[in-house]
Image 1: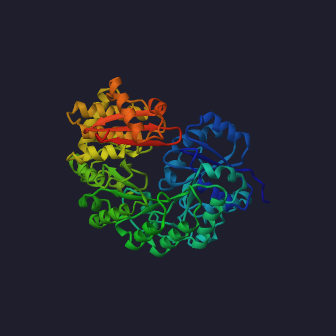
Image 2: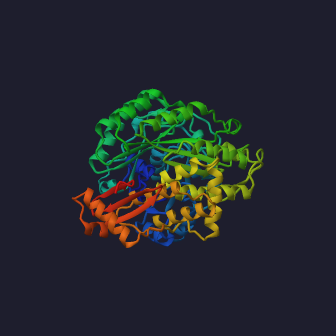
Image 3: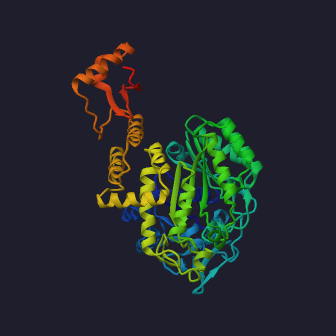
Length: 553
């Protein structure tokens, strides 16, 4: 006899703007009715529990990741205390150490790997009391023993039903990131990455991918992120998708792709640079390290010369936004060598440079080799390293301080021209940011609570403190600060002009620009005087106008 059950799928996302595609795939591919509810990790655990129990579910499916695993493991016994619901876990955080997680008696089943078909088969087996032995990737208990079935990849991805067409999602599309897949699996074997454990690269039908993009855009979706580990793995497919997006995108949309930089073909770079509008396409390129020995130790084979050449070609077009990634804590990269990696990569001046720290993820080869490289690491998520043979805790503290400065003073994009000017005079971007971090900490700067105004003041103060302050620096920083202000801003530099000089200046401006009113000059203007040049910035309600007086008045 088949039993009708209430199935509840629970997503606990890291942020509201994220869309949990894993559970939407499960829901779309179930032969049973199900309900999907979503929370974020900032929601109170008691409120999450109450919301779950309100549905009176018979089966609860959780999608488990690095950011929510602790919360879910705490939540499971709370649910079991008030319910007899069967709890099923899936997702990357539990897939590669499922025996460890199911040892918690509040967990009934874990599905490793792709779960769309396996979860449906599990529900069928629970419903009709049949065997679990043939369900791909299932970890379960039988006769007081833990059993784990082999994981089988879904070979024909096009058999999966579409997860994008739920009517209840339409209202959320404009405010959330939409995740798209052209392929699954990774052709590479980086020992610190879970993707390296997905051996087979398989592709969705490209017309299906195009139709998904059109559907989402037609309902207001703006931000798209392709989940492919190496989007440019199959050049012809990548070109076809780029061409489709360029010719069919709607205003305000942006598409992000994870690219293997040294394998990127000139054909792709030239095509996108020649045809795409600025800001439509964003590339994320993982560099991780420029140290060949380090890369070889983690099974990365990277042609740095080709990689840097491709990045410069991308930047030459001024079309593609670039996000580059580094990982601190890889083998054979001490503080001095990591700072070299940082300086080499930062010299490219990417729009964003993410400085991450090695995480010893469950299931990865680097975690199994921890003793070989002397790794100490946190045993709780996110399993970040504490030290190894080459990096010590104080070294990591230094790198974290550089990361704080990098994130606030570069990645936020408040002052790219000022930072480029400063760093063009420095021998090491890493050392400059470290010195700056020491100054900021000594002056109780809060890296999490600040206004744009505070950043310009702090870096100006630091330049004075370091005897690096000069007229050219003041021109660069004040010009960028004012041009990026939308209304007449506060100023921190000496802007005083005697009344008679200001009157003379304004009269000369009116003489040469009759359309400008004297009242507007007093009301809207900010004046700077550096390098024997006076600039007048007029902050009108709908525009900024800059007038330059190089001693002509």
